[in-house]
Length: 444
Image 1 (spheres, rainbow, N blue to C red):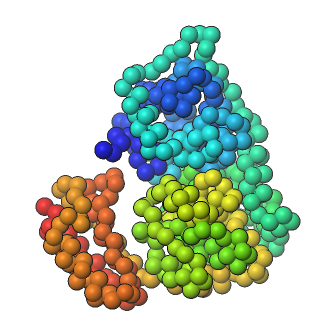
Image 2: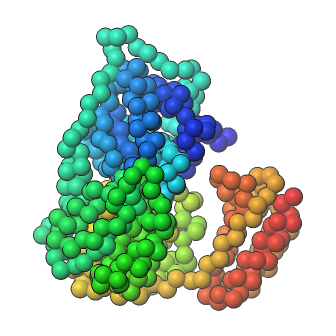
Image 3: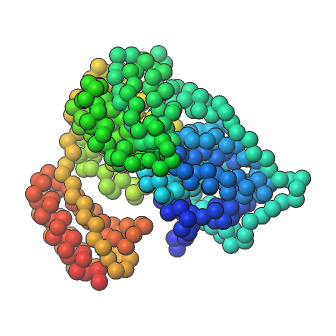
């Protein structure tokens, strides 16, 4: 049975609608305190730049203090900064208030354990089980206290800078940095400037309502125009909470998570520093798998969601993994996906090889990929529909080993996602449209 509130990455929704309400945040804080710090302890809370962050920060703070947990507030900083600072400050767990790449009307709450990792399904289930009990208020002598950590930005900045080879500088590189008007709006430009880069910031002027609005990793068109417009060497775009990254080469072409993963993995492999397989997801472009295969690098696919990539990396001893969307995990540098750290790894390869971003990506050919979302009246597994199973078998015969077909139900909406990719663009499109029609007819 699935969880009621926790999704792929924490709890998320429209502000004011269940579950993203003040009273729910208060109850959630109390439930989390009972599970993660039952005898008192401490929690670190960060947020992105949404205007509703103030609301949820206050509600969570009240719930934790009432439950006897001390609160450390670090203000607007990226999600990976919360993971790092939780571990650095010795807190029992961390909380990030963010809806990631969603519009400002949404918000969310993510948790990290004391090591800076995502919570297990069992721990999330235990928190949900406590929600029914209502908020806890301990006796006055056991109430928690709340304080702000003023140096958290500089500490996280130092952590990011420590993930590149010692002595490496970015002098002479001109970079456009798009902070999505989100959590990384201050720290991201400073990190790259500190290494000597000439930084042109865009999307770094949040007003509480413009997060991810026409900027950031989900809307890189402004970055694509700006990079060649100011004659920059490259551009990078983060999402609202700073854990996703896409980059743009000097010609304005977007490099997605698959291409960046290839650049990082190839460099680690060449340096003899790559252990275990590279892990992507079922949606990762087949071109990455083939490019890594030519280098002799094993590649595995996890379910969609960076937490599933992380689990597979831990199970197999791998250190590099990620998603097409730009969630990139460098476990030899950080405990969680970190857009700034990922960008630094790519820029380090550019500097060490003297190659441009465009040149570094040439070893991987992205195969044409068509994704069609089919609305269905009920949640159904497409593999349970005989007509669909037969149609997929026929289509796989047509592809003859030159492509892939993935059918999966959405985890959040009444949709079945039909994805087809392969070398022949026309064939891929034809097969995707045919399968989508068959799925729609069968899933009634």
